[in-house]
Length: 197
Image (cartoon, rainbow, N blue to C red; front, side):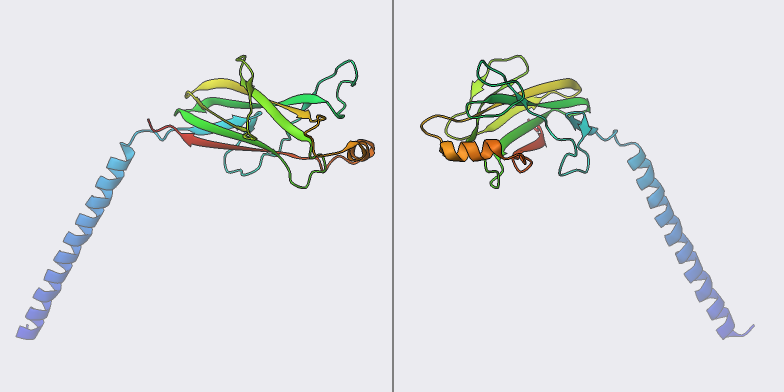
């Protein structure tokens, strides 16, 4: 063999050797990364349900929250009229949640709703006492412990028919005789955050 051929062969062997060494190191590093990743703890489950609907990957729930309209001696049950009161429930299920978390619930009347005298009066958590909203603030905050079954938050509202209301008697009447009340919307916003301390 010629000297050039021998040098070429030596250079080729060196390159192949370093390449194999590099590939082995890379493969070993990848193997080590996979091993260490496999030894990580199980990722915590964040499977919150609101009113029996899983909230994963959703910005809006498909199930509507159906309010209950109270009856009294002047108003039939299920009928809304000036002076009516009612409530709705937000049920948070955390049975499949592995971390404690905070919640924040805010209720408001849609700005396009003609029933501008609908106001939120208070709330209660579970079987606790009713707390009164004040100053127009309707935010409810609290926390839920991991793997807890249903926590029920009840929000109370009324069709304000007092002297401080916005709608006069004519507006009340026009709203009451309008058969299409689908544009009467209450917006309930719920935010969850993991507790860090």
